[in-house]
Image (cartoon, each protein chain N blue to C red):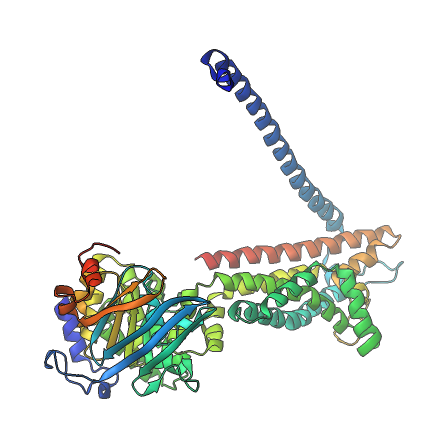
Length: 291
Length: 294
């Protein structure tokens, strides 16, 4: 199964080859500095007057998978939602500090949040395909919502290409025009990944994408995350430490202090963080002593 | 000591008495509930029976197609009233459904705005107004004011005022049923909010929105009081929005208050037609609502 998925993703050209100018991870020496896709500086997030995330500085490298781990309520999902300005769609929510996406200052007054979101794809905790749309229309939803002018042929190609990127094509090619809601949970989540990829984001944010899935579906998504990291920068929030160690190159550990504000405790290469944690709180968490 | 009350010897018979008393109370209450239900159902059956028995003799093809005749001539029907009710429904719906939907969309989709609560409150107030008051208002505004005489358009406006809060409240509830995760998914795809509403929220809720529109139309089709002061009624076929127009409830009223038996039968007939139309709409609603569950 995994072999076929790998075949598909390498055979198919990704949507935007220009974005893969950096070397593939297996060629790059792990220590070599790579371009930064996304950077946060003193990022804080609030719900009304309650602060949820405090002063987080993080860098996300191009073409890498970065995992954000931490116990429930540590602000990891909130942090993720700040990266594409989805956080502020919650009434009363706001963020301070800076986020740089390439050369775009995400929170600059002149920056349109809609523009930011169109450069960053997002996959949510629960699979959420549009229930009244077919599989095909779900993948085509992004381009259509953005008003891309495309011929029927171009759209057919785009849908097939992205379903293949999400390793879903073989399973749905005969039911492209059936409801996306009729697929299994794991297939729905991969459909959501195809939908997010269809608009060529440079960064893909994944908010606990496997927490509603069974182990086999989880395995497929993890496989897919590793494959996609060659084409797109991935930030994945997970409460599952094994998952973080399986899919990510770098891991950030967050923890909410007694004041309820989630802060970054430790950030480094995944192998180092799980084998030689620098912070005693990280060690306590990864050895299962709390959280 | 209070503890003495629960010694085994006295407790067991007392417990039997309590249980027996509870059983009797239970039987009484359930009996009363059943009786009330029967009365409610009997009322419905009686009303329907009266309307059917009274109305059936009036029904023939001419009843649906002819205009009302002066008393003394035989025949005559409710043709203009059917046409008028259809026209009033179309015009009032065209006014009220977009306004009500817009208000609901505003309240649900832009709820962080500070106008949402006042909008909902006013909708509730308007929904609570007696319909004759709305009739008087539209009479003063249009019949005495802008239009200058009784006119179909004034009737349509009065019905629209009644429909707007119904549409707004029902659509509001339907929009709230659309999972927030779908809005988030669309926003995260880089869609502007208005496009999320038009392309994702409304299509997802379309069965419910349709239900809201039909519900409001059915409600307004039976309104009489506001039409008395606005559309006035008309014995002739008219589709002119700036002339008085007939409507089914007005025609029922006109036939019913006359002293003639033949016209009373026609009033029953017209009532039957109105009840069947609204009942059919209700059935349609059920079908639509069931599709939503699918």
